[in-house]
Amino acid sequence: MAFAAAFIVALQPMESQMTVAINNDVAVIGFAAVIYFLQLYTLQSESPSPLIGLFIGSSLSAVILSKPHGYAMIPGSAFVVALTLWRHPRSRRAWLFTTLSVLPFVAFAGVRIYHLYSTGILIPAQNHPKPDPGFLVFLNTLGDDYTAWLFRSAWGQFGWLDYALDGEWFDLVHAVWFVATCGLIVACVRWVVRSDDRMRLWFSGRLVIFSAATAALVILFILFAEYRFRLVGVVHVIQGRSFLFALPSVTIIACAGIGSLVPARFRQLSAAGLCTAALALHIGALICIVRYHSVD
Amino acid sequence: MSRLAFEWGGLALTIQWWIYLGFVHQLRRYVDKVAKDFNLGNLPDRVSQLRPPALKVPCSYVYLVVFVSIAVGAIGVLFVRGLREAMAREQ
Image 1 (cartoon, each protein chain N blue to C red):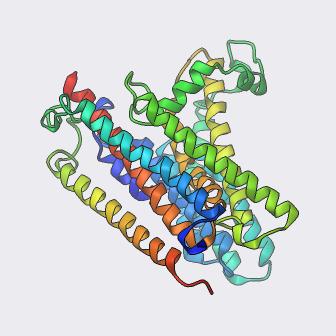
Image 2: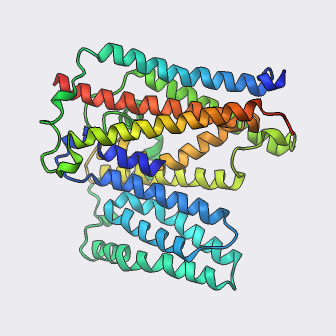
Image 3: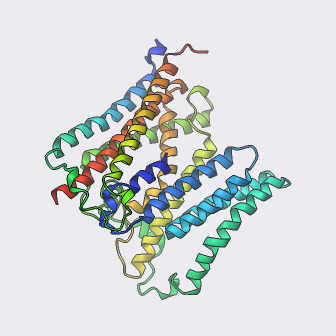
């Protein structure tokens, strides 16, 4: 669904401001969604599929070649490959899975990374003109205005344009997150006290932890990129859309939290409601953009 | 009674749907508010000049209609299946 959504986003008029034929942000969102789905599929499957390995390696190469943001997907993929080998150390399929997932990555992305380093495009840390305050200090000093702008710019305005959806939309998004957080807390408490099985997480607990780690890694990686840009004197390069490829994993976490609040037989109704809300937000964002172009 | 959602799970579902319907209500309000400025006719001249014709208006309208149709269809299927599941006899 995330891949389909990214494909549809590619057709929206928001790229009109970018004056390009193909938007690489959309490619990052789409390929990251595919990689994340394949990672979950591999983690859940009994036996690793070499074809899935090939898809993971190819998609990983594609996401990195689309935009450097894609580097954030490497640790998760490496973890999945390592875990597969650890689970099936003597399986021929596992080694074939590993080989086929690593080969395309080395052949395409590896060459690209080597090229970036050898040509000095990747800025060495010692060349920073500003004193290095440390990444944790940077995170602590992020202003509320900037974080609010990042959040708002993820929907509707595609980052750097000065128009956004109304605040009421974001109150509703916050409400969904509040419910999801309550659900995750309830699920954790129930898991600790091992009570009623009916109200367990919608998904496997391990997959939710993997999703949380993926989302955290992506968000921290993008914030680290902003931190590095600021060190060389460039500000506000990172915009809301830069975080959107974390959405698939964030969505799984939200669904797990929301689904854990209702018994299993109500979950499809809950999912129908969540999809209704997502579609309304999507159409609202589209109308926002079209209106912007109409009144300008 | 529990099949009719008169339980904690039903209460949670009601709260969730109350928030979800808030999105639909907001969309309706938003459409009413911006209707006077909303003009799809302005788009063809503003979309990137470099995009291939298959991704420009009017073709993109076709994709948009297909996407909304699929999305509404998927939600409809989820809703029907969800209602059936909720009202089914408990094992």
